[in-house]
Amino acid sequence: MRFQTPLIPGVLIQRYKRFLADVRLADGTEVTAHCANPGSMLGLKEPGMKVWLEPNDDPKKKLKYGWRLVDHENGHFTGVDTSVPNRALRVAFEAGEVPEVADYENVRAEVKYGTNSRIDFLLTGEGRRDCYLEVKCVTLSREAGLGEFPDSVTARGAKHLVELTEMVRTGHRAIMFYLVQRTDCSRVTLAADIDPTYAAGFATARAAGVEVMCYDTKISPDGVWLGKPLPFFDPD
Image (tube, rainbow, N blue to C red; front, top):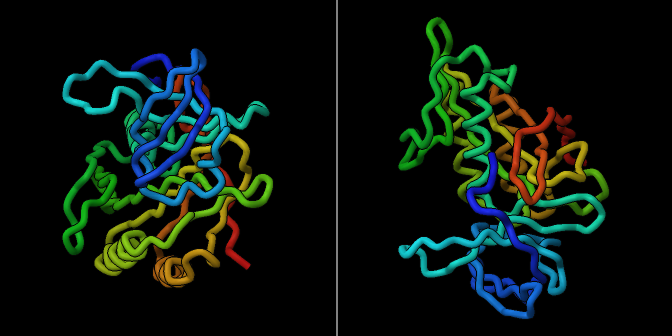
């Protein structure tokens, strides 16, 4: 998935009020960018970090920049926009680029299910069990090469695990899909110390038959694309 507008580099001044970030551009101009990430962004919001912004001229948007990437300046990037994974995955699903679900002909996004919830993707196909697939964006890494989810307590994420479990119990297929939106990770686990309730719910869901899939991403200032499968390791 290519970014709609060429990104421009800057230096992070501060991230605040969850959805705002002040950034200094190369010419010294200071701008405020929208931060499309409700998480804690642990390890990704330190002042002085190199970041990439996407400018826009949409009159309906109050802010003329969106924060898209952290540039670790060692050849690696982290995507901080949590809306990107679903858009990139939809393209991959429709192109049959995910072998585990390539035999589903129909892909629908944001379908109502459970208790006042929407599943990220409902995959259907003739002769196949309906597949309910929930996507989680992994941006936390506290150990070299290891991606972790979540980066803060997520009651919403725990609720999704319960609802996926119920889908399995009613005869459907359910998948928890962890998309690692950073290029420096080769494996995935849960940050059980950050949210033990989520970790417990995950164990229950997995025991009930909810499948786990992990993929990395290819990221550059040009865009974000689905990468290769990654192994999942249970937390210690």
